[in-house]
Amino acid sequence: MRIGVLALQGAFIEHIHILRGLGVEAVEVRLPEHLDRLDGLIIPGGESTTIGKLAVQYGLLEPIRDMASAGKAIWGTCAGLILLARKLSGPRGKGADPPLLELMDITVARNAFGRQVDSFEVDLAIPALDAVSSPAEAGRPFHAVFIRAPRIEVVGPEIEVLARLDEGPVVAARQDHLLTTAFHPELTTDTRFHRYFLALAG
Amino acid sequence: MEKETGTETVKRGLAQMLKGGVIMDVTNAEQARIAEEAGACAVMALERVPADIRAQGGVARMAAPEKILEIMEAVTIPVMAKCRIGHFVEAQVLEALGVDFIDESEVLTPADEEHHVDKHAFKVPFVCGCRNLGEALRRIGEGAAMIRTKGEAGTGNVVEAVRHARAVLGEIRRLTTMAPEELMSYAKEIGAPYELVCEVAKLGRLPVVNFAAGGIATPADAALMMQLGMDGVFVGSGIFKSADPARRAKAIVEAVTHYNDPMIIAEVSKGLGEAMPGLEIAAIPTEERLAVRGW
Image 1: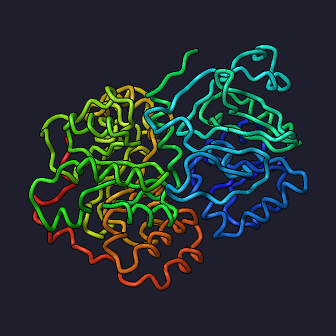
Image 2 (image 1 turned 90 degrees about the vertical axis):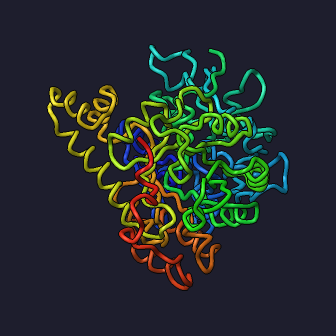
Image 3 (image 1 turned 30 degrees about the vertical axis):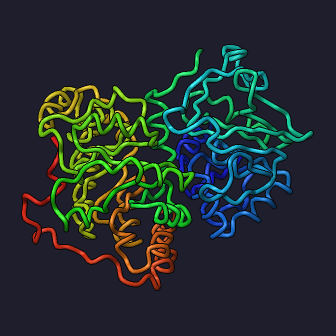
């Protein structure tokens, strides 16, 4: 299996290390030709405006949409979640909005939990991960790191909600082969989300 | 588990999200919007850019709160601000204003000639400058969540940034080849906490993100720092002291992403107009050099 990680800006190397640790071929994607022969793509955390602008500048949005139409798995973490969304909510008119891939039927609020001093870690119950859990991992909460994180405010009918924060806002979701998390599994040593994604890609 | 804020993981984690990006010095909302539009991954809110601090002399302090708030209001990307070395009350004020990162910076006039801020006492993450591995590890020991080389700010001359990057990365390479029994005397020699020396020897890198700063003025300067092995770059005076800030800012962002692709660096380097005027380091009197501030 060959997975690309969008390497325009942000925490891409962390994803690559985890993928390689799982025995998967992982490649950095900066130009459209790097998308060739991939089984899946991860859009990492970073600054969504920066990643979005560079993706437009180097002609990556359309080829990524084509990958999605071809049924390839795509996973966005944090900034990647924003880019996968169909719509942004929240206070507008401040600063620049990133361009969106508009692939998932979700409406997303950026920086939804406040500024950096409000960034947090918390344990989440994510029953869907049981499908890829070893007996020792089964039922264990997932330790989630939220950094200036977005959250999903509205979900469409095709969306499966994977996790909520305090039974409130949606922070992980799936639409067929598209996956999204508001937090950063790549900043932990728990590889269950990566294995869940690889199952979607395989 | 209850929600936890201000942890080492979330502090260092924000720095991880900035990697592969360009952090730009800005002095007002208009410049902040230009930086965001160009693709900056964060901005540094300042009263004056280092080149002007250098030219005007006098005591350089934390920027006025209304200036920082104006910039925070203008953009959605993270906003950093500088406090003086050792001035923990300026740091408290910056945290109260809600800035996303504090730079305890030698570019401002130091407030304490022996001690840096105890950065563990804050929820907001700190970035600190260094010239060598010992200085980097002392700052991390005090709680810095991110490190940058000092360079020589406000000169448009990359030579000091290169010197400091090579010093840190070279010392790390040397450290990884040492026998375990050599680590304690090495820690003593460079004045660094022993536990951090052991951690670096094991990891083969700093335990936090490491950016280049000080004197970066062109896309090629930025890509040079990336190829040397830095995680990203700060550009201070280099953008808004140049002829066409919007275009140069965008070019430096693209050069950092495509730092290994000389064709792209060549392409984005075309038609940028004049870079900021440069300063020869030897022409700066020793007492006016900023990089030597910090202990």
